[in-house]
Length: 278
Image 1 (cartoon, rainbow, N blue to C red):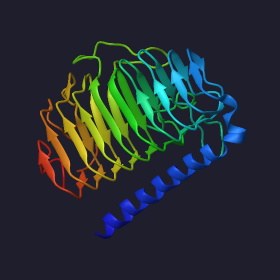
Image 2: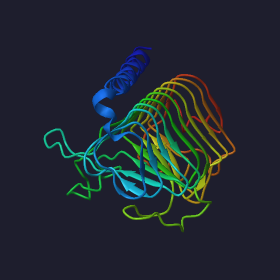
Image 3: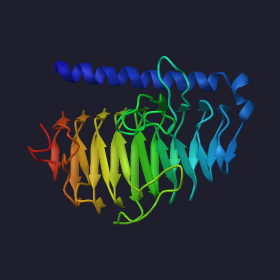
């Protein structure tokens, strides 16, 4: 119980900070609304503050930090790449902070957040291990419906994370557009999620969530990956229930080198497995 209180007390504090940051962004509209609503059709998104941000082309957050007072929407066929970091000593990062929600529509692609080893920042001079990282936050939810790829690392989300459908099909033959590479996949790592995590009907090369702290329940249903090491989950801390059904392969720790998942509610279905949860 002590571990429980410490972990989820930290989550509550962090989520509160995200909400306050979002509120302050909205409150400073007098000097922050200069960007107004913006639609990016391709290229770098100019640093600054926008009311809403829509993505229709291949757009990057790489020229400085971007704040959005309301919502970010990656429209059908749009690609948002926010993988350009910095360090505490050398502030060269380009962070994305959203007070509202991030929506990813049909065949949209979202790559948000980078860190050493697990998702090396594209501007990191060390592309083997890395030392750069981002400080991204979403005050509301991340909601993806029939997206092509959703990959999120080291991001604080105030509310829910939901990914329903999409993934490009059960194969590893597709190719993501530059500056990305490899086939489409879904991944959530090193996150703090203030609500629930729900992933359903995902069909792709690979899917996983690792080292996340989730303040509510997790639902993982009917997800199919071509990689037999897919549906990987490890070293997560989940305050509510963990429900898994109809996934192929069955949820597993796989080759993540992670540990058993801490579930403070009940593990049900395919996830009621002593090799997966403690």
